[in-house]
Image (cartoon, rainbow, N blue to C red; front, side, top):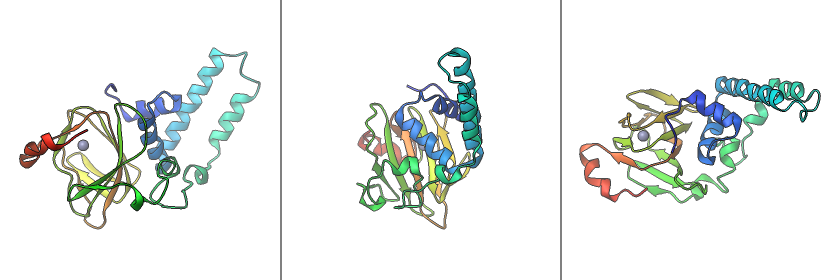
Amino acid sequence: MMQDLTLDELIAGHAAGNLPEPISLAVATHLALSASHRREFRTFEAAGGAMLEKLEPVSMREGCLSRLLDALDDDDVEDLCAYSGRDPRLPAPLAAYVPGRLEELRWRSYGTASEAELPLRSPGFRTALIRVKAGRSVPQHTHDGHELTVVLDGGFTDASGHYVRGDLVLADHAVDHRPVADDDQDCLCLAVTDAPLRLTGTFGRLLNPLLRF
Ligand code: ZN
């Protein structure tokens, strides 16, 4: 469904407005929490605007592009980081998909972790909030497709590194990992997948038939 994409390509795709909704939500959530990538996003947007001006010189009103670039230069971090007022862990793009309080979502518990699917109607994708208890792990698994994880609160570690709030982590069939939440607090993430996870640990292999996508 998705080709093997880099984070840069995802951000460029988001700027161009041609990503599926769940992927766009993950990128927007990441951008809302990450100042350095927000700058990169603006560069891509500006490049897109410049390209548009070249392609459609007549339809672009005079000064339109410069006003757009001015607007992008404004450091309206307030706006990008505007919180819903309900839960400071959810940046604005994500809060739009969580109508009530986090606790009011339908959480399904898997022991050390729990999951609440978000109401996106995008066939082929699964979009969920994942909560992993402090110091505990998600079962070892690999991915038949792609997995985009954005850390919203706390942090986790796997073989590829340590990730904290705002980080976007890409994983695919080449990654076999066992994310472990930081010891000091629960880890809350947004996770988007386009195919089932496949458990690879000793006990996980026995459980695979029980997991439904
Ligand atoms: Zn994974």
